[in-house]
Length: 340
Image (cartoon, rainbow, N blue to C red; front, side, top):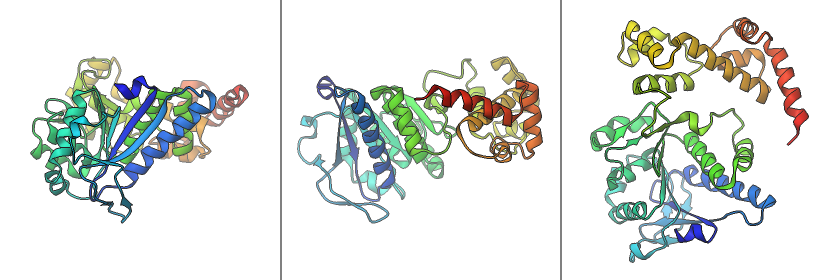
């Protein structure tokens, strides 16, 4: 596209009534932080340009009463406008149906831009705009948990993945929450400005330990290194619910499987028992927290699903031949001796 050839990344953020303001401001601030970091070390780094876009040039008011004025509108000949590299569709605070009905031109413009090569990122109920365009028919998507059942009824042709916070279908990204949107933006920054810029943004905007984008998404056409999609969904659930007190028997029931079938399919697909897999996930998460946070050992044990600090200590001794305290001292010595 022209914008990319001119060494720019053009991002259009769509605005409409009852928009959730943070789903506009957060990605904007993160993107500009990524650009600033990259250009500090390389003045030829891609230049970021952004604009607020609306179907018409009227003022838009968010749920919080924050007012937005569009930089550009689709009132006149939208097909003649410059096609952006990225289009971001923020979430709505209310039922999106009334707003959708008022935006037929915007919905057609989305389809046109997609055909011209734009990447589309939608969060929460903003995903409905993409679904209305037909671009998600036969493809995967996710949305805010509160809207899942209505979404299924309104868009039966879309392969909704409500157990995933992020889905990616080629150039369409869907996020179920604001945190998931932040993870997509970090991924975009990494692709555009490099991993160092992405890590810098991550450190400055997200104090908690986050999972990498690749570990959270449902990537259409790919599964978790095996062909059993249901087991892949179970693995995702296990990765994102480390502190859950649910038993594996209850989890099997939640996914419509008997305990015997669950155990057999999981071992067949992954080569490991589910209990071993979940335990290893918890140990790896604990290692990350020990290296990157100042949480106490008891707090870390709780975060990864163990009520008893002693249980975590026994597992560390068994698997690593170290206590959690010794592991923290060892890894931090390595981290801080290397420098930036």
